[in-house]
Amino acid sequence: MIVFDTTLTIDGIKVNGKKGETILEVAKRYGINIPTLCFVENLPSYGACRLCVVEISKGKNPPILSASCTYDIQEGLVVNTKSERVVKARKILAELLVASAPNVKIAQDIAARCGVKEVRFKMEDNRCVLCGICVRMCHEQMGGEALGFVGRGIERKIQMP
Image 1 (tube, one colour):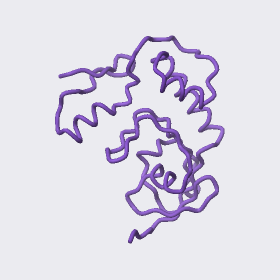
Image 2 (cartoon, rainbow, N blue to C red):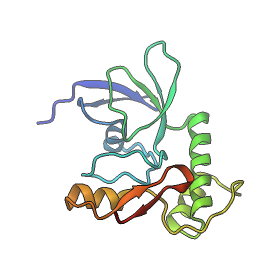
Image 3 (cartoon, rainbow, N blue to C red):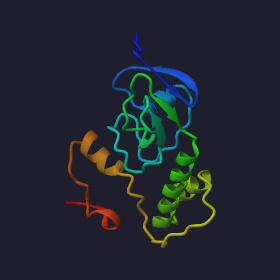
């Protein structure tokens, strides 16, 4: 039997979870949709794509934006998945994603769902969206180091060591 020991609010709905769960995991269990790209069940969360961004309030502290896949639940958190800040952040992230990989269907689909009509950033012609799933799968599930990230920022890519 699962013992839920933490209560929080997501989009005005009181929900329960257990310590160690992330906001994304609890939201999924309650049928609350939060978009993701790099999240894969049974792999440690990575937070690379940031598409699962939510607005989090705790007590009197000002709300922050954070990736829901890497943020562990806490008693009394108030989470908003659809605030104006969240929608704007997701739209910019989706726009950057489709600018980086305009011919990748998943990037196109995410951009459409986030309301991207035009891309203001320089278009690249990458085939990889740098979600990190292949790197994490190789490392975590296969125990190998055959793939890895190299570089930072716009120079980041995946290659064999």
